[in-house]
Image (cartoon, rainbow, N blue to C red; front, side, top):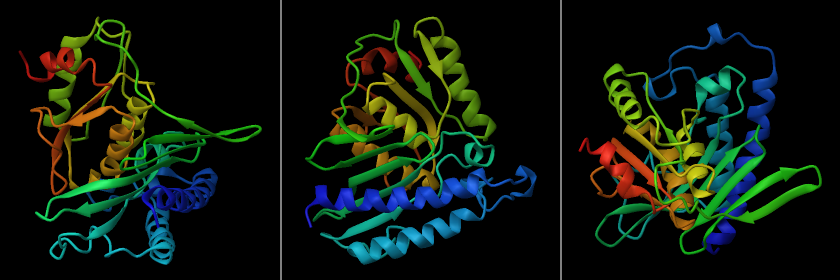
Length: 278
């Protein structure tokens, strides 16, 4: 199956899983009943595990490839392809009945040198009625739910060339040292952008750079548990002709932690002045 067709089929799985998650979200619940189940999903409710199980079963039936990214950490072979399924991205938003949370699916390909990179990505936001999907070499699209049915649109980044008057988004974690770093940058930058937003989650913020809603996004520390969300959105950003790099200009490392910056490709130099501390 071609990557583009595979992306469309995988997107239908994400949409169906999103219906289950949304139904659970709107059911009455007490946020205090949720518990920490790991650093990456501090407030994630029990639905998370069921969603992963559902998506794994459906994806394996669609095309099992060479397995799943998390399980094959020590056995990934050159030429292999591995699915990467994310937990709910934006679990705090989910538990607090906010709209900004997503489900993500990505596919990694390993080249002949053993280097892995995502080649397919789906980011689905059930409450917002948005699905972003992209496949390597095929561009990126956004599917919007409307009152007359789904509307499919090709997406491209904004054409803003300077921070002045731009709309910037940033991410931060609950680790104090990481949050302090990004807040200092935002403080220095204040007054140039028309707005600096902090909404989350990372997958949705990155897609909003891809579709031109934001001009750039940056975060000082994304961890291994963020890889599913970031990898899915990375394909969307790059296929929309945006840019996604580490702050030092290097490639994102898909095996560990990263600082990341995504832009429309036009204001990267202006933004780098603040990220580099010059």
